[in-house]
Image (cartoon, rainbow over all chains, first blue to last red; front, side, top):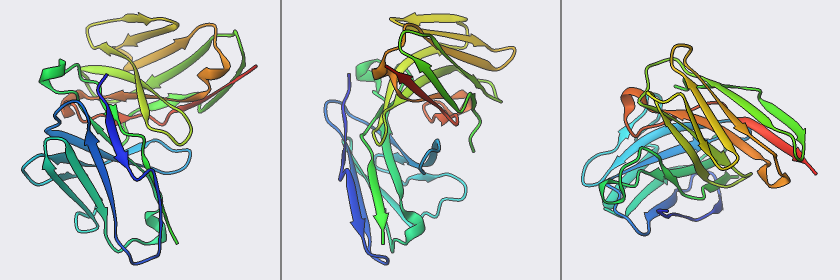
Length: 119
Length: 111
């Protein structure tokens, strides 16, 4: 199946710093990627839809200036948590649909997630 | 917002037993999917069932869908310790590929 790579898998930072998380589709092109956030023992909450070549679409309640998304190419989307605070500590997961060239079945391929801890 | 609800929240069974998890949703859908998540990892797609399908099988997995009740169930037969994970249902509906996930069921299979 299609592979989505996410990096870093974990990061610890000081309050006030910015952290960038990368999401790459390794063997397919992803015009769209989705960023989710997951708190311990909870479900995934969609944060935003990343669109290649255009602005991301944010879900209600998600601060676009706080969570900067850049979909620079057909294989890379980045999420930058700006001026991170302890309440931003969470598990961030990206995903992408396989696209037409892989037979768009409606399923999503997920990265392994990035655990952010803000001290 | 989350639209899927799952029950039970947690399920503990012995190896070899069957595990059944249920999912309910609120809006119309094109398809419903089930995913598995090992602790601290990403999600892995298990099975997709379309709105015009009632039942689907894949190996030890059996999924049913009742669109009149807006509910689905996932049955794992002959469970193994390696099946221990969280299981989530996800629906698309009007969102297309943008999936909305249920609360999840934590399954523990004891050997």
